[in-house]
Length: 147
Length: 170
Image 1 (cartoon, chains in turn orange, green):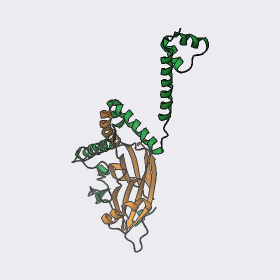
Image 2 (image 1 turned 60 degrees about the horizontal axis):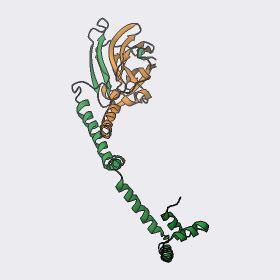
Image 3 (image 1 turned 135 degrees about the vertical axis):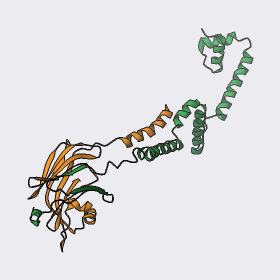
Image 4 (image 1 turned 45 degrees about the horizontal axis):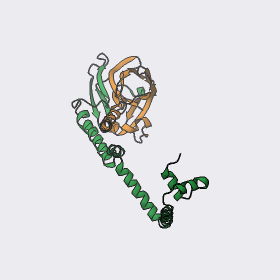
């Protein structure tokens, strides 16, 4: 009896360590961002702070300005929403929840014209950045982050 | 009905009286010898009372006495009972904790890490597929990579139709 208790301790530890935590409702921030090189860049919006280094390194621009955004709290993992600017729209369709995040279908529209479509598994710890078309001297960048 | 021995003891203790006393003394074969025995018994009693009176213990003696009694009681306890009290000793608890930790580490290092060594971490965003409208952007290409420093996954497009600066409006 006591020996079995002794062996029970490691197994309880393993079970506790291996039990997946429930994901619960999470909020996804979706943004349409214009990246540009300007003389006096504005500070990056707070939603982009954690990926500021990667954005500057890969895109080579000094300023990142949000022209359209949306925040959506996902409860069932089946929601869909739209982040829009004057000319662009990003339609996000959540198609289920996985262990680490959500499966999303993304469509970028220029007015009513579909420019780009992609499917992705968006992880809570890993933002998604999509390089869009060139706009003037800048670049349209799409960002999705689970907050 | 009292036996002779009971009456004898009561007589020695001076507890017989009246008719019972006179009848008992009349039944004695040698009253003088009996009186002598009674006197000896009384002397012995007085001596014992004087010499073996209750001893007053000092604090130290009382503590030692209690401790000694406890040790004696525990040494007489059955071995199984003693073991039941002391099985979870500190060293055993330490061993149990160490064993648990070792099993956990083995599981973490060898089982979890080697579960899918070739697969990407499920905690990084993965791009499953990407399509560009070939009519709008016929020369467009897509590629994807990850910036592990910030855990960013990037879908990189080239050759999308360029747009005038007006499209940057909010």
